[in-house]
Length: 339
Ligand code: 5GP
Ligand code: MN
Image 1 (cartoon, rainbow, N blue to C red):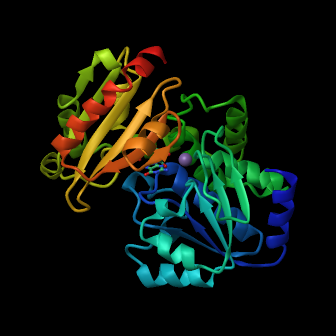
Image 2: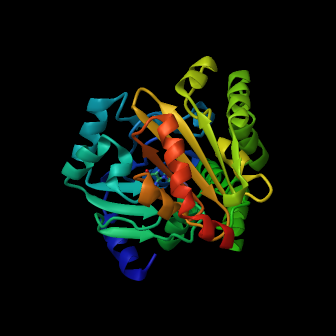
């Protein structure tokens, strides 16, 4: 954070305020962890704070301290709307554009509050009085730690904040293995463990929660995997029928795309998941090295994210989407083989 942003933030927070902290649609571990950690910190500073999400988050994140205090727009429409209207400050965390909050964007656009953005995605929109954006950061949760440092508040770090931020950093770094994981990330993690985060228990709580249904769905997904060695690419499809047959629950497909990327020689992996309710194909893209799935998704799937991890959607059928994907790939053959 630069000194001007620190002083604007300090001024805004110098008296007790009504604050809302918002994460993105389909909240992941980093969205939930960073929002809850920041909320806890702000509460300790005497503010009245409510964490708000556009919709529900997966069960494997429900155990996180204070997670039950989160309200979501889909299930608590009036309460969420009122909190946003009454807020004097709104922190938006782990996303770069208000449309990443789905239907909640309309409420946010009408809010009278001052916005503070904390995020590590590329190309942030310009809607906040303070834009703390750092695309080199592994996670928004690490940025919340640096935010506390910038505000001279690290002594407020407690076991709950440490646990919340640990979840966000662990999940967004693929357990500390993605390239954005730095020596500083590990120093932050050391601080969190010293403050009471139990690394082994947290890992088990998040990752050792498979249901037989989820593993069967993974089996179906891997069965559908297609290798395209000439493009150093692999893709996976999951139909709505396959989701139904395996009693799909929110979060069940999280991480599936990484199996495709884990194959030797693959630098670009993509998963297409049919969603009949929303009438879209949800797309997750991952890459290794310089090949930017952020650009790929922006150009073809109305999405975005980071260089090596992005999301998007298609309005075509599952078959048409995969056929189109292969035709798009032809244009990237050289780039994929050189990166
Ligand atoms: P996932 O594939 O796990 O849904 O998303 C991968 C990364 O891309 C995450 O950091 C997520 O926040 C971001 N992302 C997912 N969908 C979109 C999208 O539609 N637009 C943008 N800008 N980012 C996205
Ligand atoms: Mn994140």
